Each structure stands twice: as structure tokens, then as C-alpha cells.
Length: 208
Image (cartoon, rainbow, N blue to C red; front, side):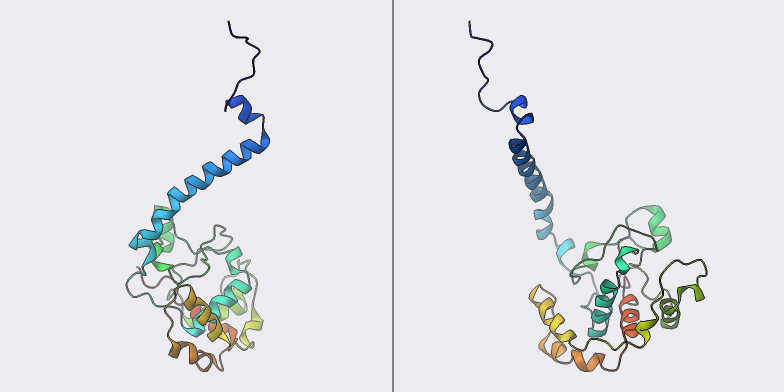
């Protein structure tokens, strides 16, 4: 009769659960495999890799505005991802689809909504409304807790935006040599307020 006190060989629940290093390695393997199975197929689906109809890369001014949006931390309070739930589509519009974000590096989806989702804000308000709202939100929405950004009105834009466009071309955004070369002239004389308004006015307008 085998000795019941003989040590068990191979993998067992007890061996895995009492060995921290082994447990960590196995968890990492499982999570990595699961992640690959979930993510890799998306790279081969046209609905997630091709732009929707009418979508164009950001213009130089819009791209400057997007940089300002990130610099000022707007993503900390505003998401850009409308989920396919009735409560969200009734309030914000058509749910977001992957083909709308193929030129976004990085994505601005977010998950925190201290303020409303902005993915369909393009064209919802006039440029003048956006201008007043950014300079002092409480002039239009008295109960707003959004910070004011009055300095944007007099801050000149970054005219080196062509370098950003050249970098984005390397990751797949189809900017031409002519567009990159003419970027500085296109934004010359504009303010950061003009730029961020241009960016917000193009958000989500290609799908209604």
C-alpha cells in the first residue's frame, strides 16, 4: 500500500495556491492568452480598422485643438464614447463606433463624466456659444462647475503642428506632403481658443 504521506508530484491546486511565484506566472499566462484571443481578431475586422464614410484626418487647426484638449485635461471630466444603451443614445445621439476613431492617437474615450459626453458635440452649438462657454462657462450655464479658460483667447497656436502630422503619418494617418508643408500657414494668426473650438465642432459629425 502506497504511503499516504508521500509528496504529490506534478501540478496540484495545493502546489499552485501555496506558491506565490507559480501563481503569478500562471495568472499572467491566462490573462495574456485571453487578451490575445479577444484583441487580435479586431485587427482583421474592417469595421474596426477602416474609417467610416466621410471621415477625414483632422485639419492642422483641429489637430492643434485636440492637443490643447489633452493638455488642459478635458478628458478628466468628459468622455468621448457613447455606449449602445437607450439612456445614452437618447441624451447624446448615435452610439460610438470604432470606425470613427481610426485617426485618433491616442483615443479620448474616457470613462469619467463629471461633465457630459462630448462625442457628438460637433455642430450642436455655434462657435460663439463655444467661445463664451470656454471663456466663462457660468455665463451660459450658471450651475456649471467647469473651469474657465480665458487665457486661450489670446494664446497663439503652435505653428509647428506639421511635425505632429508627420509623426501621425507614421502610424497610419494619411496626411500628404502638401498638407504637412502647408500646416503652419493654415494655423497662422489663430488662437488656441479658435483651435479647440475647431476640434470640438468636428466631433461625431460623420454619424447621426
